[in-house]
Length: 471
Image (cartoon, rainbow, N blue to C red; front, top):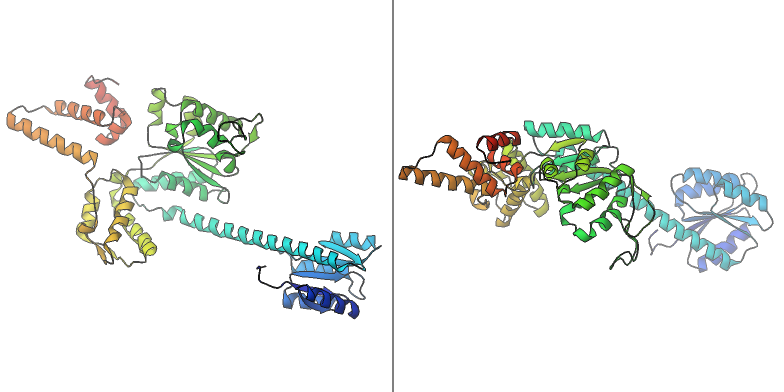
């Protein structure tokens, strides 16, 4: 009920004098009043005028107040309509029967008008809160439905074999509640995959809480994830439930989980094993039921080998692993993605861009996308700054030289210089030098170097052993 709407009260009483008195007194207090002299008449008015509150006399001939009350509750099932019974002061039996039948309050005759007014206003406040709650619940259902539609697998763009494998694993992951690790380079859409799994699962209407582990300050990781008690540390001015408790019943998405410090890894493992958290400064465990979806752009197996990631936690979260392929390995998807991002930006900026020119599409397809899908999304969005063009041309797109392309160009220049000088290398020497440069470029991260070289990590290890480059 809006604040400027005059509350409408339906009064049902078989005595006309009572109706006139109530109509006059309540009218002077700002209410609109309609009257009925019987239960059946009251039911007809109920459906035609939609009152905000009903005053209902119990003792009426024919259909009494209790029977009328039951029928009113049937008509308004699923919606809160406050009904206040008018009873005799000593009629305890009718009051009990009325409350059991669904009455919200009662007042005995003869009643004090100030008391009746207070009870009416209290009931109307409850009705307003109830309607606000219903509106909120409806909006939550609407947004949940919208999110479920937004993150449907078919709305994640991709038709290549690599993406079909991703979709197949996502469908399987949505049928269980076991932990999932999503691997892949930055910008490949790992969070989109996690959301797709969540909104396709039985947890879709429960919370999805994303957490960027790399962005959490080391000294606050525990309190952010598991909560804290007031006064447990400087700045803890009130209790905080923590992100795991906020995700209770749903999913928590731990992005960049490979960047968690070892002590935080130990506490996370305990939460997964025990199904409970202990807030910082607290003494009691709090039960949580949360599905863990994790993502990383580093090789967790290598982190385990290097002693940077707990092996027991790795096996705990790796029940199912999904690899988000880099965009350079799914180039046939680029035209589909470009169309998708153009449609997004047309709607966002109220434009009518039809597509990209052939030369621009070739440039986009030839580029190796070190920033992956996120970089492509930004490039298409950036092209919209040029105004109301119908087609995106090459001059509308800005592509940077990637580290991979720079390394290839430097290698090519080096080879040409050596050829001119007569200092030409054998294929094995060239491959060894190439691997050394890739390792240096990737700061000796073998997983990244393998991806940069376009080979499996196991094959790189064999090459390292063959060229005595160490492991």
